[in-house]
Image (cartoon, rainbow, N blue to C red; front, side, top):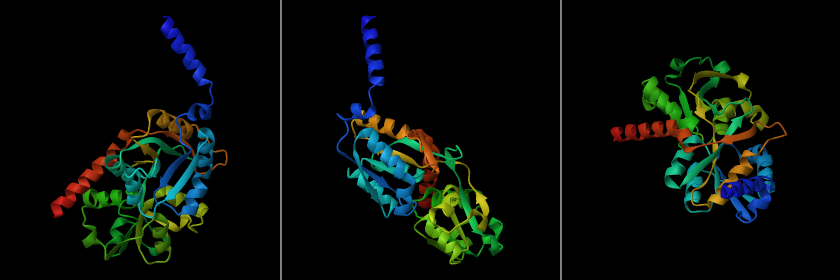
Length: 288
């Protein structure tokens, strides 16, 4: 009884110690955070600047930011222990968990309260392309080979629902490299249809993309995809991982940015993406 009482008293005492005081003994002077290239570096700095400042203050640590030009680079750098934490889309997270020991701990909560987003196929409203059947023989643009909403999910739609081979269905197929580039290509009329995240599309006008959702027609929308997330390296100490989780999850954005809160994330939240990736691998194997 005495032992349980002492544990209770100690727990209460620890609850009242500031996080940065607890973290001093477990947090290094610097943590390195990598970002996948969903948006430009300037847009990512603007979007997550207040979160980074909050975590630095909570942990009394400097966070060094790495902005990768390729999604795969974030995975490689974590595998090589050059990154402590990384921001991933669902597909890149699943790959990072398998290849680099990444562990999800915090998922974005959108401003509208949603924990997910959709992949959408869009055209310019004045193009006259209003439904998927209208896209036959048109120019198609993916975002990035490793993108969830820009490549993986629309591909699964093509093969599983629409029952088409995109190489035969479209007159031209290419990759833009990012959602921003895809929207720019659509506006510049070098592509007829693109797949992007509806979350990113919504934010376009506020991100100097010169894009307004009213300019586009959505010809297809996917099921809900779990939001992008932050993951740390599996081999960090348990004390450090807990301190990082607490710092990130205590964030509340007072400036009213799009992502104003984070919620806990677990690896199993992304089981749906794993199934899609597994099907994609089996499909590629059958083709060869």
